[in-house]
Image: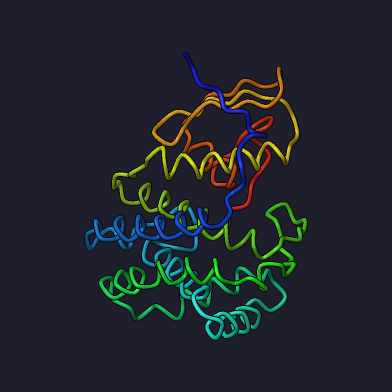
Length: 249
């Protein structure tokens, strides 16, 4: 019998689980990067401005930005300056990539392996910072206000996960997925997607990270690969109907 998960029963990612997920995802990224050969690092990715090396530098930069208060403050200042009148996140990521241009592939991997557990614990320990409201510009031009806890517990891990998908697609390397880890992250995306559009649906996601989800009765009946579902919601591919509702990654 097919097991159907009601999305309203899915708990959001929160400590201590979010800390474990963050450390696990960074470790998975390290494993992916270690599998690459020299030619893979220059392959273009689904993020037009980045090849694989630049994307890995961004992932390392984000991990290190959120690993100490001093680094966080420095990178926030540098990102704001680099952004100018544009979106802050563009300035921050540009700084992260620029500052790691001279790293060899081995150095980049080694530093990410060291930063992974450190940033997971740092994000979890920011008791006062977690309450800070943050303005975030969305792809459609709107602006949302997030609590920092949402960034720490959810978005930073989703970002690394999606970039692991990007690198697998760019290089043809296997994308290792498990129901326990990746399925949990995908389920959290499903739950947020459902909250954002508020409509009834039944969603059949295929693959190791998939599952069947429902909200109320009726509505759209959707079947597709779990990773492709997340790519559509992230804006990397297009979707119709309820799949036009994007989710932050």
